[in-house]
Figure (spheres, rainbow, N blue to C red):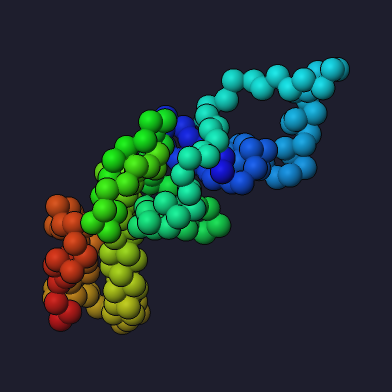
Length: 182
């Protein structure tokens, strides 16, 4: 199994080196073969230019089984796989299912937790925006009638807009304090 990593952060995994390199470069197959032809000399020797990632072959570990164990660290975002996993050239000892194992692949808790927090705040902002949109009719109706919006609705809408600022230290979605609808 071939692994590409940048500063030890896992980028792509594939059974063949060329596919791993192609995926790390973000190229289609046609783009990859065109690129490869450009860096191959007359004798057929490939002169890889400096790349911003490293490709290693992992023969001493079942990479797919280990990635399955690190499922929490591998989210699918649209069609992209994002790895919150670090590669170590020298195997590390970790506990998996109450057993010590030696592995090259270690979950990066800091990166995963930051991603989970960002995803949580995206859900919170989406909910806030939905709640604001649900009250737009009140503002529209007041404007159409030439009246002002009541203070309770103004306060509610302002409180919704302030949800991220008021709850900026919250790390658990269930702890978000939502204003009461008038």
